[in-house]
Image 1 (cartoon, rainbow, N blue to C red):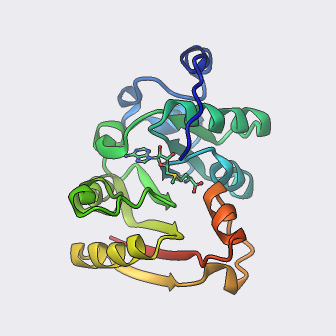
Image 2: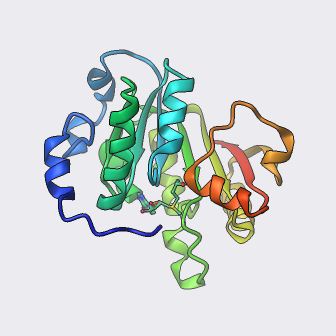
Length: 211
Ligand code: SAM
């Protein structure tokens, strides 16, 4: 994703610690205390500019959403969207999702969304794909049974890779869809990338996988 240089991003992060939570490992096992309820927690890995998480928070007010975004300048854009919509059920983390077990306790998360994850097409970068087995270890460790991973992408190669990786790991696949927008799923909240690629006529792939 293109990142504009935002020199004020550090200040923004420091001024919005109620939304972009610093030192998230402090809340491991205690995220519900921040939301002040016991609703299920859904996380989005690679939140990007925040359209999906804001839309989901509005559609599902009884779910707590936590968006995890590695890039500082991008999490700031997501935060601006959250602040504008002002939902009470969204938090953001400016973190690398490779350390999820540092952030969440066993059984703390109900659903993980992976939306238009970077494809990392070169074989030598396989370990960076968010459906690589090391990431699946992390997801398995924090998901409550029957924990689900919902993955959407426009990238056929990454989708095919993920079908194999998830199946090899032992996940059960459901609702494998090769053209999501053809089925008119009214509940589908589009991400920024989804809007961009579907406008170009590219099919959107989606699967749901269960540990
Ligand atoms: N999900 C958004 C969408 O569909 O519009 C953004 C998609 S963009 C291609 C992928 C995003 O994932 C980027 O913003 C990138 O910084 C973030 N990302 C990639 N690897 C990550 C990781 N290990 N942890 C957290 N975020 C990550």
